[in-house]
Amino acid sequence: MFPGEVKLKGWTGIDVLLVTGDPYVDHPAYGAALIGRVLESRGYKVGIIAQPDWRTLTDFTRLGRPRLAACVTAGNVDSMIANYTAAKRPRRGNDSSTDTEKTELANRVASASRGRAGRPDRASIVYANRIRAAFKGLPVILGGLEASMRRMAHYDFWDNTVRRSILLDAKADMLVYGMAERAIVRAIDGLNQGKDIQDLTDIPGTVIALKKENLPDNAVFVPSFEETNRDFAAFNRAFRLTYENLSARQGKPVVQPQGNQYVAQYPPALPLSAAELDAVYALPYTRRWHPFYDADGGVKGFETVRWSITALRGCPGECNFCGLSLHQGRVAQSRSERSILAEAAKLAADPDFKGTISDVGGPTANLYGAHCRQWETGAACSRRQCLMPRLCPSLEVPYAKTLALYAAIRKIPAVKHLFIASGLRYDLLVGKDADLYLRRLCENYISGQMKVAPEHTQDRVLALMNKPSYDRYAEFAEKFERVNRGLKNRVYLVNYFICGHPGCGLRDAYDCSQTLLKRKTRPEQVQDFIPLPMTVSACMYHTGMHPFTGEKVDVEKGGEKRLMQRALLQSQNPGNQALIRKALRILGKANMLAVYRPWAVSAIRRRQITYNNPDKKICQRQRKILPRQPR
Image (tube, rainbow, N blue to C red; front, top):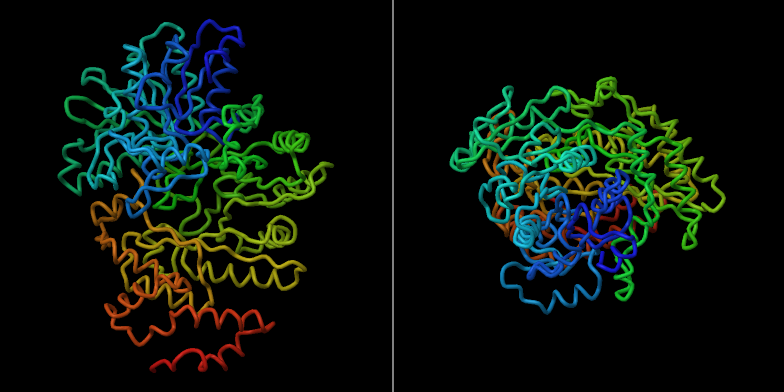
């Protein structure tokens, strides 16, 4: 936003300044746009500064001093994840940057931080510092994923140490965690009523720093930052107590001493009801990037979400390595069919629409409409999980309702195709109740590839990830093949795997690769594990112990051995041969090298394509390709 736009609106100034590390796209998939529209609907004048030049104060001051507060977010992704790979090497850029920014970034040497994709390292801290320098005494509120995942003392992979709450590092006045609609409205309303931000001490979904005399009476005290920094057991105990109080109804305020201050996390805000969620997505988004980006050809990453619809938010899956349940919450919140159909009709009426809605989903597409009686109160079970080790009997997943929604969208005249591009929870598709849903998905709603995430094949590793047994995946894969045999256009599985997770050693990676070779699976999507702050897996990575069971967990932190694990899973890549050779020597399996050679893999793959029913013929002819294996 620029001063001329403020004048065009007839404003003499703004009430709230939003600063974001993302490019500005007025679309609900972008957090700053969504929060900006929510505050606007409450009558506030909102100015947005996207990807400011953090080396000077010029961008931060161009709209003038806001009347109430400045709200800061690093964007839709943690800035350290955006800027660096799992090997801690700078990324070349990402799809949320314009081409011009990428060129400038490639030639820029920053003195204080390495900017990537318009974001400095630890963007929330940098932006907050610039705002405090520009506007003395202005309340600063942090939000977004980066703030949510760093709201208490946490292990930071990039510094390889425990860092205190980002609230203190940024010297901000308040931190809003999770999906922030309720909390940010209450905070801004309080400021608008003339209250001091230090007095806003009872807002669910917020974290603030308090003096000892102001601490809540029912607070749960967790080990201090100093204790967690020197004692692994204290670190895990602090995490466990924080996790146990993440229920919007049953949770209590969690207090952690950090230096001479007390960081207080209030329980999460209640999830939005379907009607409230509908209202958020019905706000007047233009669904366009700011004209500023026209000269650069727009915002490349926007194309992946431009013609998609968010049908739900929240994730009850609680994978240990994932931050979704920590940020979006453990309750799946679904929009109404009427709201989704209205958005689909709006997309179809757009002059640029080509006839394809690319997705109707969320964190897990096949949890749309999921319902639990416990969720009616806005809470999730404090100890029981919805999907692990099996689907909880109290959780209902209405596949018939979902299929009816898809069919209704397809009836909109301008809609030629509807695809589901979000990931699917495969363990929910094994039961008979999902037979028709899976068949209809494969027949009509998958554009060639269905995304699922088995993550690994070794059950011991999967248990540490809080993922279902691989037998469950094998059961699904068999069912998927049966469904596909009768289809005119075959659908293929895209399998996502993780290597280097705590508890996964080189032997586990070898066993995983052997299972995949036997199943003729050559995964392209293999992610190097990164310990996201405040996740269970990050606790295991840092402490070598499971935070809930106390079980000792072996952790591979060496760079080369982590690379070896990935190489074993992706033996089809010629560049992995040296790492595979070294890994097999370490494991005493040097005689297995030929199995991992790309030419062997490609030869097997050619035979798979040649034969309609290849399994038996491949086995008969495999001796011509691979050496005989020892008994």
